[in-house]
Length: 92
Image (cartoon, rainbow, N blue to C red; front, side):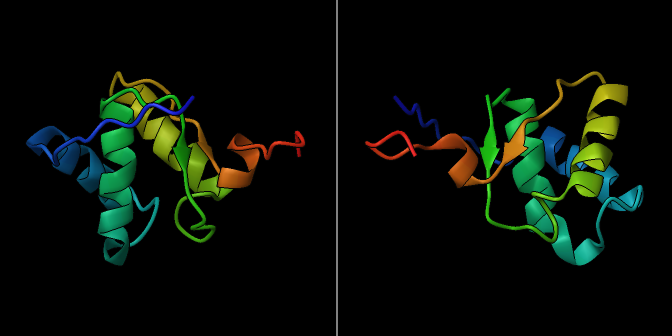
């Protein structure tokens, strides 16, 4: 079962996203991606699913996001592709 909750972009999420940028996890053009990750982190999402392999589902970047999250007192955020999360009715 999938639980979906709508969240709003808060000042806290904007500040965390700005940290990702200022610490060079990704460049400024990836601000929307950083806000997405910050919102998932602050709202304690079980997992963030994305097809964005360049800026989100990328081991080096995930380590960068989570390093900042840990240092700032947030939980580590699971970031995966939808294929890693969802299974079809045959279990594949």
